[in-house]
Length: 340
Image (tube, rainbow, N blue to C red):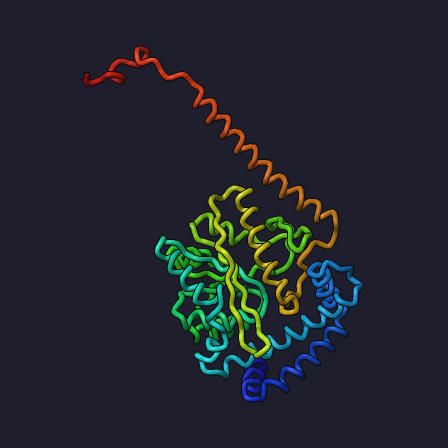
């Protein structure tokens, strides 16, 4: 961590432009020398573009992702050298679905006694958005993995606390539920890679999974799910944008799957605007058609079970409405006409 802290300090005191250019060159060299990672990025780019893996546009997008990620890393490492209020000023608060609109949505949910679960991706810079949210007085909490790189987790958590953003370890369910009970804002990244035990969704036309966590938490707590993205603009500033709230009326498999599919649809639209800014370095889709078919069958099973339950409820309602009215004379003594 000493090396990281020194590099962060140095980058914070050097001109940004030349540093980004050098970092981008270094990352592209890594792209060329790391075949396994290159194949992963290219496979994800292929799905996003809907083009074969060997298409030239796929390779161009993969290289553009590396350049965008280099810029993100430099920006992240420069943040500690900046005054706490500077990152917040980098985020444009205007726009039809910008921070001002987000604030109105948050106030409405709070008036209803409900929390908000933000779902987002590795797009642009969530760090600058977290700083901007904290500067607007939002009670923002982020969930992060504290197991893979615990020292880096602590360093970044310390950095976010400077802006007023608290970080919760992903296994601390008690604290997560406390935030939601108190109508806080809980931010969850959902593009951590394909996991067979996730919720099946269609994403860029192909079957994959997303984590069950957002929909399950919303079903249990009554929170609304709000997709959010923070893209980098050409002038170096950031444009934050939120989607329509996603409601989860219940915790049945069909309701969890439907809400998670709505999340996938919203995040797909966010990626399509600037696909080069989506820097996910893990496989997002399953490797085989067999796995994809299994996901499709699981989604169909969830919907079929829901349809069957709805049909049973309809039959019960029809049977109840067609039953003859009870004969008062047949009622037990003391119930019908009592007190007459």
